[in-house]
Image (cartoon, rainbow, N blue to C red; front, side, top):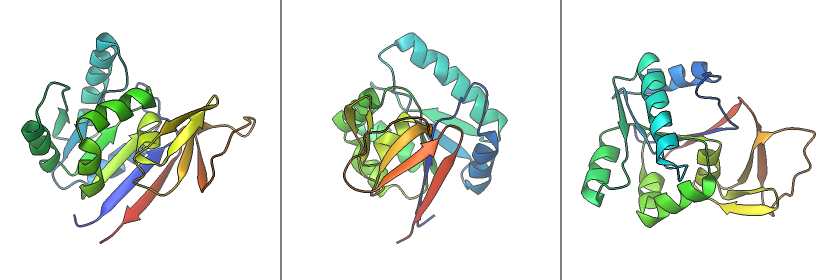
Length: 182
């Protein structure tokens, strides 16, 4: 795959599989049938461990042959090996500040920018892939893989504090797909 496809989800309840049809379509597009999950959206090891099991079951049952997880203890060689072995990377929901920090400290942001394949950001993952977001008057930065800010879990009754620049609102259980070709 010579292009990059970025899918930003407004928020999926992965336990209830509210965007399962989308994930099945992604699996059908995957050549390797391998997905890499970067599960670092919580300070709680038990919560992260719980969601690793949820992701493992979810992605296996929809057709991925292998579900791979990045571990915080892995070195750059192992990280590069895992990223180069897949054509789909998934960044889950949770705390966008933690996900941003953990990716930044390991310089994975540049690897995501160079990745040729499908990048999926769910909620916090969407924020990290975009230019960022404002939540409850606090700005959460993103890596700017797309040139706009996102507001996930968008609800028309909400009063949002928009940032300067393009702002995209993505409601719960909906998504936006951007294709970037060379």
